[in-house]
Length: 132
Image (cartoon, rainbow, N blue to C red; front, side, top):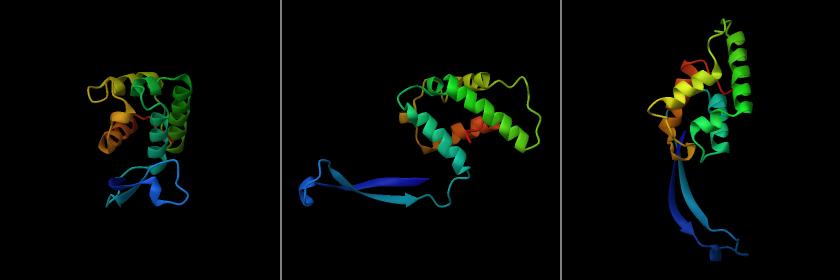
């Protein structure tokens, strides 16, 4: 969504009174055009994955509250789009399939880049899992 570059560090002695933290000057460049993604859903997935950023994607997604939320989202999305919900489509099974793929197996949110997150969201959406 944006590229962030650190330009320089600013020492605490440059402020009065000096803060207890170091500061930095950064440049934020928005991606133009922005990626074709539903930003509400993007935000839901990112918040969920970074809640426990050092756990594997599978571990974060396989918690009972997360599975319950994703099942509710799946039902809501199907109802809003007048689609029949596939009884065979189990959220746990879909999570296992996606996180078991070579691209995501054993990966952690803290080690993924923007394109990885976009691909992950697209893969879940393709299989009927929505985060908003």
